[in-house]
Image 1 (spheres, rainbow, N blue to C red):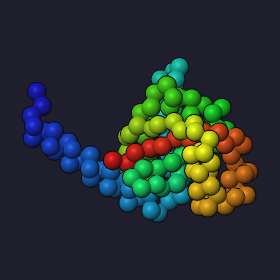
Image 2 (tube, rainbow, N blue to C red):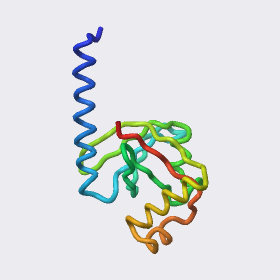
Image 3 (cartoon, rainbow, N blue to C red):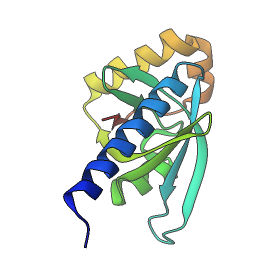
Length: 133
């Protein structure tokens, strides 16, 4: 049986891991996203670009709502992100509001360049919000 001290230690370790992950974000332009396959349940990883927003990250799937990882996250919202060896397990929330998606895509253009975003992101109809805390 876990004690309150155990939960306190676990919370402290999670906080330290979150801080390490947040620090790692400042020195990279992409993270590794790991999702659970919606049919297989297997862990599937791929590199993705991100934009930092307050206490979270915004992600945009390259093929929008047709992207497999987006469909997987709709089914199983728990994801793992890795940046420079630091990991964070958290929940992702789909964003489908066209105005909010457009705002996020504009932030991607500002960070990565309009031509790069246009060449990599063929469908820009959805995004994902990821909480860091």
